[in-house]
Image 1 (tube, rainbow, N blue to C red):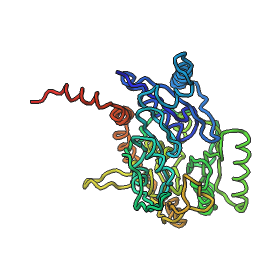
Image 2: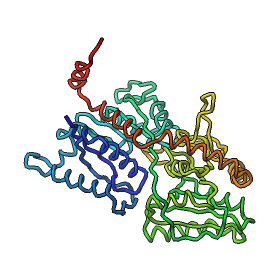
Image 3: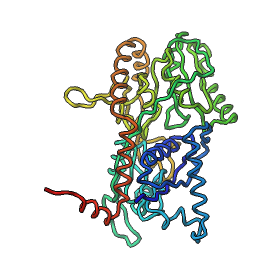
Image 4: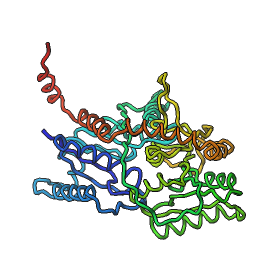
Length: 428
């Protein structure tokens, strides 16, 4: 019998959690013989919405309509209850853990996790109270969720040492998703370009990325930095604010010869593919303080573009290829780093704790990595192709869909159904 599953997440959002929601839907849709899918769409900050008309978007809108009509059935006494419990076998909730809730007999939290070294106690408390399992996207996130412990006192004054998460945590990575390149209406006048794809934020370390890049190549007119970025959304107002912030940052470097390109606004997947594969592009840069996974790095890597990054946090799941002895070796242009407390302006109550830490790229190491990318281009291109082949072989859509479905379906299987499965086994 098919499981009636409610998927709560920002399925229409152009964001990391939006892509995570759509991955979950693709996985579940690959086994519609197992799942009867319903959707509760939620907003995600001020991010924009997916606008391109695709078969997948048409299907999502059909499921949203189906979910609304189901909630309005005469036999549903309280229409809000359809998203809060008894009408479903299982819920899959794609959000941060403090927003998990009991929506069905079986509840699964699917979160990107955390970019730091510690999760909030609110995350642990809410997860323990509401979900039966957590699925996350990287080993880094899994380790931090499992390893975070607190010494607490309850209202009665009783001490609880090493209080932490009580539910199991599993990992399913993102799969490759290839698209045909679609050219952008932009002409690069430099033939040695570096790419950054990131929202402008404290965590992404954009100011240092740009400043240190300019200081490295200020006298080289053949080098360019291509910034695909925004502050909050893809609107015209956001473009104006992003442009103003960029101009203020580069203003002290009036005599620079290197070029800065700003790309703002919504891009379809093929346009990002075109950027990753552009013949002038030498590497993708990411010296963020931490990543839950790092989708742009992952996409660039399976398109064969070298990566300049630190060897810490979520990207470690895909930037490493085992050597002949089985040791996982990063195949990137490495940037050294220190692990230090997060900045005060990065603290986000209930999400990024003030006593947590993340990575700080070292300035001199980053500048050496930039120079090495050009000076040892053949070597780094070879390493990138090696990593590309590894990813294409080990991160296939069908394999990761199967992993995800197995975790969701196993958790939502009742004791009676498990007994039935065992009874069907033919034992010798």
